[in-house]
Image 1 (tube, rainbow over the protein chains, first blue to last red):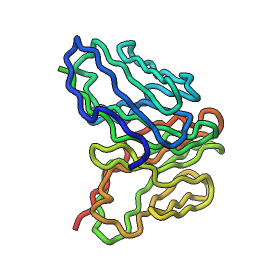
Image 2: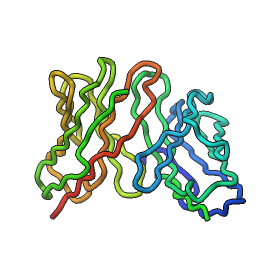
Image 3: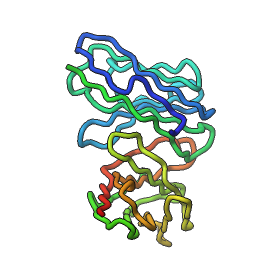
Image 4: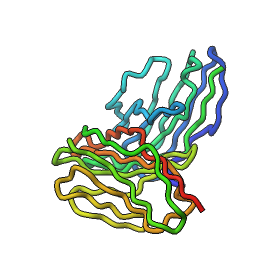
Length: 114
Length: 112
């Protein structure tokens, strides 16, 4: 238990569906992250939020839309996804006010797009 | 960010020390060496980090060479639960310090 929770843990959706992934951290951190891990590929950073402001968008397609309403919650809104978007989506958090920082990861949401 | 190079896989006998190497020959002076591991289908877990000096915590030891071009993560008494993919990452300090770039890591298999 890392203090970072993600829901749902598993999600199956069609290409025309709209769904959202939720992440919540109970660590008092100010930075939150979305990563994508496709089969047999390294983790890829998607988005970074520091103090609720998006500071990094790693060339992610617009069908992925992040939202950070406060420092404890992070959402990833999904619409018109493609089968190649099937992956494990991981959320992480860190303190956010220092240089190098330890990131704490949630258990991930395993997404299957049909 | 400095690129790190790790062997793709290693085996270790249960109860023995597991020594996982990492090369980071282009590491810069303000980059820390971080180690995470990922047990199958779970989120990565922080293990240890260091800049110049060797470090030890309840999970592992980190040995960094004097020239900082390589490091070794040591799990002193590996158990079956240590079977995981281990990632060595050079993480910069400063404002870019919260950007982690994961490579392929080393898949450690601990065998009975």
